[in-house]
Image 1 (cartoon, rainbow, N blue to C red):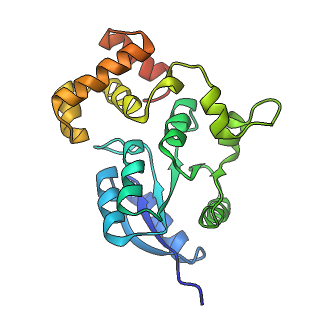
Image 2: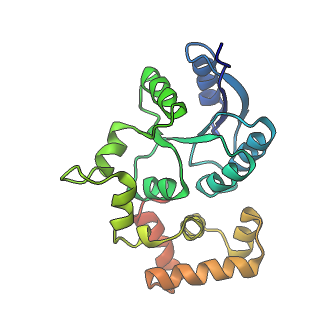
Length: 220
């Protein structure tokens, strides 16, 4: 008999976490190992529980959610990571896929669609909501989402996941020291990432970088 798949829910809205817990542990047939409200807690929960699936919101307080995806793989290699976001923005989709998520779903999807998508992820597939898929599919339909991202030439798509993380924090108004504390890095390391970011986008002004973060949809 197949074992019950385990899942960790990471979202800063308690009511949504409760609703997802009921959905997944009821009709979904999952065991919810933990329900947390920030990305750092999600990482710790994955290390502790080794879940089959992490359902991850992108807009949470504290540590940038996209930045922990690769670390989840380090502490729990078999965990599949699926974004469940309120936003269908090119920059967020690009950042999430670059980080290596297994799917990107939006919160307007129906419960049945979410359950179906998560089952597909556990079978080894990548899943996207319709609005996400429309933004990934090229006109000729021949290239995969990852190949399209690799071929993109926008400013944001040139950035590494760490540079995108720094840009998002700039957009949220964090200083270098605040970024260092949030990212658990030294101020000097943050300065290096910021310098590379400025070189890659050709912008040396923090105000203009903040505007870029807003224009790209990295912050609302």
